[in-house]
Length: 368
Ligand code: AMP
Image (cartoon, rainbow, N blue to C red):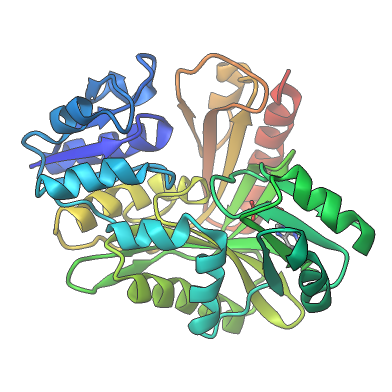
């Protein structure tokens, strides 16, 4: 079998690594000749909307998948016109590319979301204030990631200029959610409707970038864990999603509140390579190629520490008990994810000391 992937970064790289033991060959499309997945897969160097590049990467492929949600519509149209299956389907992309349609879907499913209102011009500002109030957060509806395309709004007077700063149209104004922790749930869904859901995880960010994931969430009330997993499964079912998706959530005093949906493998699921019976990457490959899903159970207690902007001395990372080091082979640059370390232990108590070591090393190298 052959899998084509739009995007050749570290997510595609880990998908390709997971595909190999299943006997699946991989081709990636990425405009950068440096793209990391090119080291472990055939690499077509072309723009995502380049017809010849799309034809080349999808030639002989059983299915085309993607590692990022901002795939140009032109690319999908080209692939679909040529009869190449794209999974997750263009519907998963269409809904999740727009923060408003994403929130509408979540609300329809009875999943709590932040109060919100769309702003498409100065005339919408008064209504947005009436519905949401202040303070709040203004977000571009499309093409935002890692907190980019966002402005905090402190007072009612700030909203109009902040909206103008983001282009004045196609923006979403959200009320601030008071949360205790940020969580996420990764789920894989097969074409036959089967699902494999991972344990909810806790995520900590630094400079708007994921710094740490703890799997499972320490001391999470079982009812909350269940509702978080049920939310992810409900989203996957409602989208008719085939492949992996991730729902990002806030833990609040009133239960979980969903923030966003990523229709793809996710950074907060990297722990599953060592920490789960079947990784999110393997389950994505299995799902899109119609193979049975693997067991998503956790093997113990895991922590994933991202290496951002700079890589600590590898020998020191290697020396940490239970640690596996992943390096993406990228040049250091401020805010760039260069690798991650996953630590698996038998208990939270046994995880604490190695985690502290890994965090200290990663923190010292962060944007060093
Ligand atoms: P996002 O790009 O939507 O994932 O937002 C980036 C980060 O901003 C999140 O991880 C939260 O820490 C914070 N954030 C986003 N939306 C809200 C909200 N409505 N209330 C409080 N914090 C938020």
